[in-house]
Image 1 (tube, each protein chain N blue to C red):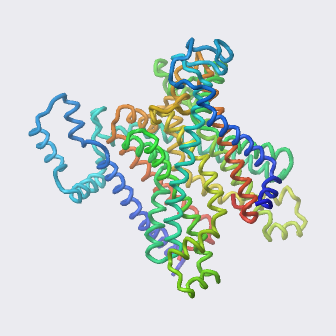
Image 2: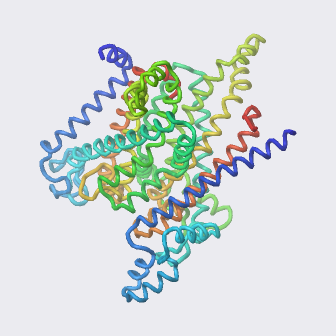
Image 3: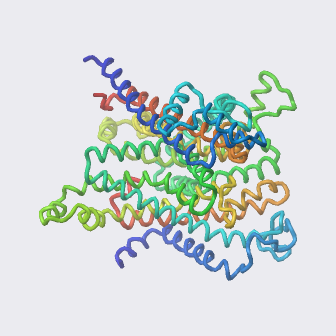
Length: 328
Length: 277
């Protein structure tokens, strides 16, 4: 079997492995919906003010809510398969439309966070590993320890106090200055300006994580045989670190960036609600306040599916980057 | 025990962590004595800056004493952190031990379940669980435990896999011991150290999750907590920075201390694991 077919089979196998997890997540979602007090019809009746029991029974029949549980589960699976995530009675819109509407803002925040955290994490890890047990290494370790222990929402609030309220360098909240009617390039600059504080807040924790990982990865690689060989060849330390060790040490760090997406989504709920960033996290916060369970479950389901998808993509990229990964 | 302390003492930051943690515990126990009144109660002039009107750390918009809230919140944080970790460790050990000991389809089933729980974005899952069960100490503890047990299960499974074919376990089989006895009395005591370490670090994570939930308004409405204080004070950032700042420092110090203790335990209990963390 040639190389390409093997690779293709591996991708196919990983895709098939993801299916049961996706199904299980949807089933968990369904049972969470069942666990909640009252169903969609109760909510609808509550919104309308008054509803006769006959009308409610009729509605239940229409939505299939009078059917036995397994049938309801089947209907739910069918709905999700056709991208129907239910209806938000607060916003009077399908959940999917609401979620897609806010998706871009969250994506923007997450991508900039990952870039910042991975970039600086690699840099700091490199600095710590090359200056092992010097003051630089200790300072970076202490920074990582403190960031691990700091609640994200508090960092966000403190940044607002210092940089937005006192120094007035950055806006306190939102994604853009809507009243200014910026267009084109001005709008991009305006959004970037609003993006700074939320990105720093969300990236701090992951920055610490990637720094530690990069440091450990560099140290592990520098003990390998090829480093001894390079040293025996008479290469300078600088060349060994930057050309040989660095390249090999990067791989696990980049992989971790993908694995952390689930945690990143959780963090974005906090950060978006602190900075009123109009993304999925803010939508989740609003749904929480409005007791809009359908919407909350829709966001939950979509973010879980996103994590599965990202993990899948990272696995495949990893197998391409590192030919040693067993593909059989 | 004496040798354990000797090993632990070598790590200065771990000793510092232990001292800070002890202080937080003292504050938690002394809160009813230092501030006998309900921390939700109006205690004086509202929005007083720290040090004024008899408020050590100032007061919030309703005239509640920030310092009293922090003292009472210490108990909430520690209690929820400990309880949630306890539930998660028991559940994780149960799942991990079964998966590692029996292998085969049991292992497959339990590990797929663990994987699924690890895939789900944990903080949103916790939010959902608390929102559905209505905020209370019990629901918060359950939610944190549900999102925390998979890490323990994976760790315990790994330990069981490496221990189950050792001589002392085979001797147990030969002597006709029941599976339950081998699991509980033979293998489990041998993997206690990593469980203690992961458990101590989980208390810190649990406190952070609890504060995040309380910040979003999902705390037990009858109990003072640090996250609640920060959430209630965020609208006052412009005029009363102290309401948000001090409870946040309390979280930071407590979580940092527990992390330091966890790392100290790791170094003292499993010197060979040091590189892993």
